[in-house]
Every structure is written in structure tokens, then in C-alpha cells.
Image (cartoon, rainbow, N blue to C red; front, side):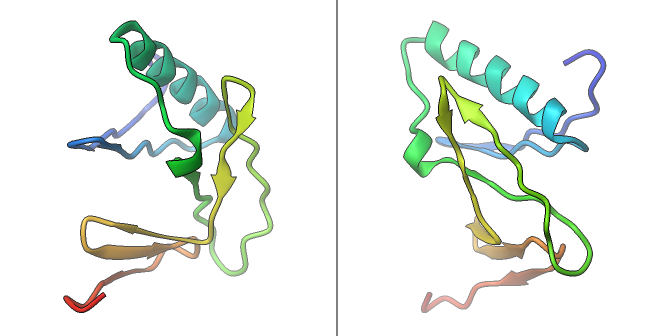
Length: 97
């Protein structure tokens, strides 16, 4: 964590990690997983997602692993009432969604 500039907002059982590189993300995911395991918990890989923010059409494949299992890469993600897309846009979700 020392050499990486990282923002990790936490809420209940959610964690969001923003880092500038896939290598940095993998390091942070390993540290997060180790910390969770030390507390007797387990990261649910099937509920975990990875998203690469890029301008235009994203072509970057980001292979992040948790205990050898690949985390799904998505193009959009709903978080705390907002929809984030991999082109860097964010919109508020309507209350009916």
C-alpha cells in the first residue's frame, strides 16, 4: 500500500478500489483478501467485479485473480444508487430501478 495511491471507500460489505494499473489492483486485491481471511471471512468472487475506465471503447482485458479464481470484468456497475460505465460516465439510477 505504501507505494500506491489508492482510494478505498467502504460501505457495509462493499469495497471499491481505484488504482492506476492492473498490477497495482492485483496487489491491492491480494492484500484485501489476506486481511479478510485473517478475520475469518471470505471474499465472494462471484459477486466481485473489475472494471477498466478508459476513454472511448475499452479494449483492455484485466485479469484479476482471487485465490486463483478470475474476477469478472464488466462494462458497467451500479454502486450506491449510481451507474458507472467503463467510459468514465456516471448517472444516478432512478428510484424504480
